[in-house]
Length: 522
Image 1 (cartoon, rainbow, N blue to C red):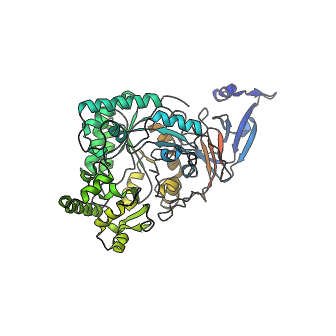
Image 2: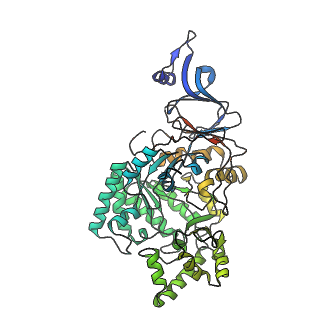
Image 3: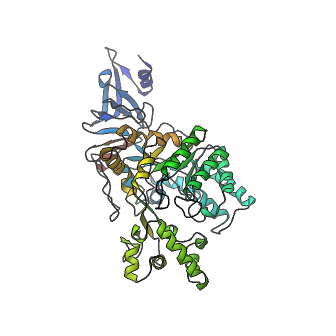
């Protein structure tokens, strides 16, 4: 008997008189088109699940399988569950009514990374305990946010951190990683108050992250031409990786706005050179032409945001500052492609929702830059979809083997509900930018390797049973910019930690996810 079959012995394998192994299993998947997530070929292997692990993959004629549940996967693609490296799912996981994480599950996602863009819940241990007590629909990996640490130590002030404050943030980072098993740190250097930091501060924190085996996930300081420029922002990320000696992951890599369209070629050359020189750098990307962010972040001057929205509006009302603020706001709107390219998707005022900034300005009889501050006076958050990317840059990044699929899933943008099936439909089936095996790899195993997630992201014996089955003809996104809250369709089965979360296209109401911890094979 070969080594694979010897492995099965730990799961009560017995032998019949003809020496054909009998496997007692919970789930048997047969007749599917199997892509294991790390090889190019398609097989028709059966997959056997026992408990929370994959027990056997191979030919059914080689074994005798007794399974409690048999899934006939005829016509379906069987693949590892997708791993989303950039989400804001913690905002849903912490509430019992939304902890199922269905927007991601129905895309085929079985593991999400949360705490991105420098923004995480604090202290992390409190939320780990909460997730485990109430249950969560997907597996979750947590990062500690640089912005969160800065708020705890410095507040929202626009100033450089002192050496003592950096030391305090380093202590906080180490504690968060050790107490909650966080996989690393994230930055949102484009957003205040992260934007107020110097590179030195970030490098020092990244060194502590490296000492604790973590990854550095970054929203670049500039994805356009707001401050240092896109190229300089990428170079800053590379320099952090060189000096701190840790893996760098650029979140939602893009060329945002007319000023930087076409710079993907330069960035790709920079990253390829750095990788050859030993810098461990990767990126994720969502497959949409429009980004999404807060209206304040997209349009208003960084210096004027110090202290938050209330402080911004006080400065705007100051006659000595108003014209400067309006001038800089107008230029920021231009960078984004003009007021017609900014669609307000989330706001408490229904009169503004699903209208462009240009339309709102015309209705209010104001200039677009003045209309920004009218909208910001509405209580609650204001988010925009910003149509500011070229298809050329999207495709150039997507072709790179160091770029994985991510959603940046946040409320009001269809990417929260549709990133993975959209990438499959548009860029695999229609435009043929990627083939199916590579789409599956960069949606599963590559992400697991980047974040060093043990025993997940592949269909492999002994790995955790995070498995999806989707219909290649009907797997598609349904959410769009006017209605961003439609679940994807075509996912027939989702198995998370060996349990059926989706069966025949329907959610089973199970909360089978786990909080994954660094250096723990749970």
